[in-house]
Amino acid sequence: MPSTPSSPAAVSRTDVLLIDDSVADLRLLMELMTLRDLRLSVALDAERGYQQALLLRPGLILLDVHMPGMDGFSLCRRLKAEASLRSIPVIFLTAATDLAERLEGFAVGGVDYIAKPFEEQEVVARVGVHLQRAAPRVSPPDEYLPPGTEASAAEDRTREAILVAGAQQLLRDTLANPPELERLARLLGTNRRQLNDAFQARCGQPVFGWLRDERLRQAHALVSQTTTPFTQIGERLGYSSAANFAKAFRLRYGCAPSELRARLQALCAPE
Image 1: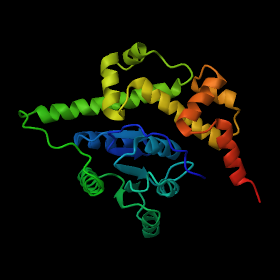
Image 2 (image 1 turned 90 degrees about the vertical axis):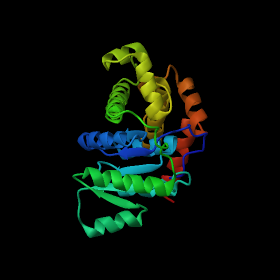
Image 3 (image 1 turned 180 degrees about the horizontal axis):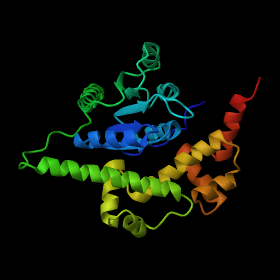
Image 4 (image 1 turned 60 degrees about the vertical axis):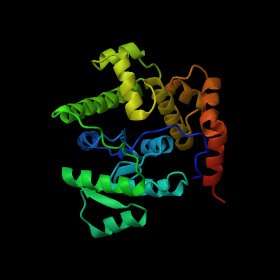
């Protein structure tokens, strides 16, 4: 499959992209990352993880090996085939102890493994080492803070991460007709300013900027992987007309939906 047509990348402060279909594992990893004051994003499947990697250019990817659909090894190959992503270090997450599987992970481009169930100190240590090796993306140490302030700040970051994850799930469930920002904030027990601030900190953009990008990520997957009519895709994702859908798609991916699908069909056609 050809690389996605190039477009200006969004400015991102994402340090770690977590890709895992286990909500429990993601929750634990999110808590550990926020305790280190790392900016993070999450994805529950490989395709969504790939699209977020393209958009955010994270400093490090933590990738589950065993996921439904595309597994972690296949996704890693895809990441390494994309010029703009191949330098991002990938750490595999797995409960397997099989040597052959671990060797396969290194063969496809992984730099390390973290075993499940997680040992918190090991996760923090390995993530810190590989972020330092890749690029110094983590903010410099804060100035002196009074005792107890660090714990309070860590709790705030954990709540912030959970708030963003909850909002993202609600928005994915209502893509065609999402709630207004005020109502979305009330549903999550916060206010619109705090919600937007959380998205700016975690995603580098406001709530509805993230929603726009999520619609386009899903649009790319539906156009490239299904035969769903473009009108239905646009309606499903909340575009007011087929023309608006095609325009937004072209601006992001550099070609019309019909062009991308035709190109992919031609590549897959038997010779």
